[in-house]
Length: 87
Image (cartoon, rainbow, N blue to C red; front, side):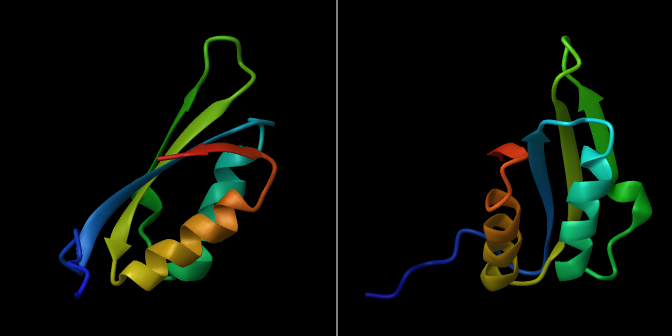
């Protein structure tokens, strides 16, 4: 039985990473995503600091070209202890 893909590629994909050490967390996330999406627009990033200032939520919206690309990004980001959640 074939698995049916949920997404139709290419597609706009918003990835949200929530992590600690907010001073440079946005740069950290963007550098990892850009390794997998070299043509990512600089305007595709939005960040929001938590109420207590301990965490930063970074949303990066990019054009995803394949499930393998998304898996590689999620795998690399989730391997870092600074990343608390990925959505």
